[in-house]
Length: 136
Image (cartoon, one colour):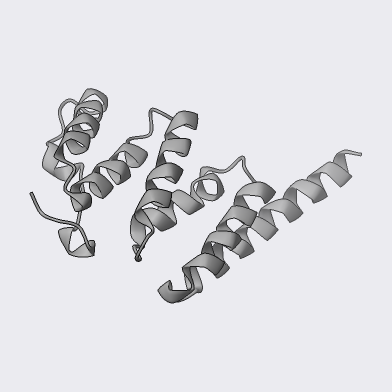
């Protein structure tokens, strides 16, 4: 019984690894297919944050027309599960910055400041206004 559980556990992880790798190898134009693969990886192996956050990471690194609402929804869903992740708050602040939402940026910066009080805020946010957003 223990051997069967270990085999199931291992095969689920291998499947999740293959889906994750396949998603990141796809060209950016195939973002819908990548999101499906990342969702499969999350379902197959939700114990590892790499798979659980795959969709959020993809949205944080890849932008396309119309992706902003889905990206924000994915980030908020993951923040409900793991509020203390500074990476998730950083990704949300970056998204807000690109959209020109300075109120949202300030809220996220205050949260990050509470998590890392001695780190300069300029090192915490990595936003690119060239990703279709506006600079402040």
